[in-house]
Image (cartoon, rainbow, N blue to C red; front, side, top):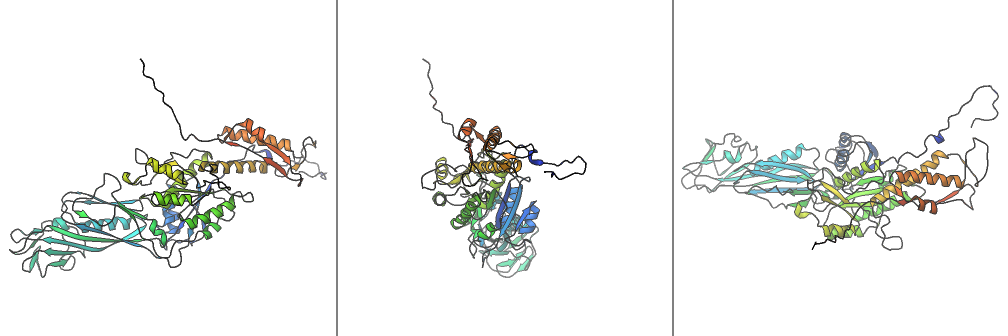
Length: 569
């Protein structure tokens, strides 16, 4: 206020912003991604950093790292929501994991495509009739190593082809091995006496290595000549590709590797492998990173949505403890942690029923080619995009783009999904176009503090709505009455003196509720006014106590109809 002891003539005007905004601005939404980096990333672990692009994430955390992939998934959905990241420190003694992909082959009788999925990334190599398994391995290695978003690197460690020959006609090997790289060993089976002529070059013994004994095949007419006792045996071979994870430690066991996910994908005849249709990498040594140091780095920031790679019981207990403390009245920094959880029905049910937290939303990732932490980041981005525009948005049926769904035979049935929803596990479905969509997003809270069943925080939308209501109610009073005096109802004061009374506060609360109702956040204003209580505290004369009971507007989930049809006589 302008002081009263001013005598210098002038027209003095002060600016008072307390009435500039009749309503609080919407809750500013921020998202936090928590995952591992790799050695190529320039950003130190356990440091909070804002992300503005996928290329920044690649620079900070390394191409193909968990955080790089999470950032890529996030920015593919929204570039308007503020997002930060914290890199977990690798556990002590952490090491990479390896998996070997072996192709055994007889003569390929039909053209096709060999398809391999690593962490949801698709690698497909065209296969020609009478083609080479070694060429397939070379193709996979080339595609994997060229993909900076792949979580692994690939090396072709074994290349072998065996062919049979006949003196009368020779055996044309160019059609099997044309374009094969140096280092491939080709063996001649069922031979008579040596030496043999390979494309006009005489060799000793019954095998040769391309690039050493002879140059690479470039002519499909190249032949191996034997003698009269040599018989044609066709072609066989073995190709081994070794895959090594970029990330270190136990998180590698969450990386799925699969073949033929789409029903239209089949392995060309003549190719066999001991590798399963779906599986996971082994765990790298060293265990999984500790999440508590990263959660401690949140500090006084408020991230309403957190997505992370941590998805084990011990980590979830730490997440719940940290977010529960942030939820209390002295911090009011509500948050929901999103994760993806691999596993079969029994393991998923055990995981969900072992939690009881309104701060954790766990989506199942059963036999999903996309890695679980990419699923978590995708859900976080999709929800952040909706909630930033409308905190009470209905989040069911929202698309989760770029998520590769499991093979139709590996998807849960209606009954299995329904069972998971009673165990605290969120579910998704695949629409007719092949897009993964949210079926129902729930928290893991199932019991109240007394151990009784409850649905109070079942739906994750309830958490987001309450975040916004608490923020807006608090912010409205802090904006409009930042330095108000507190008095009983009926007190009269001079103009220019801001006084807050229970009656004024009650009217303000009703006005706030009307705005909420108009925006579809709450309903039933008569009940709100009837239950609203605003009184001065009997022990502290500077304190005003509110009892505010908003009826949250719900979401249409289920329609039940009894179709009582008639047959006209």
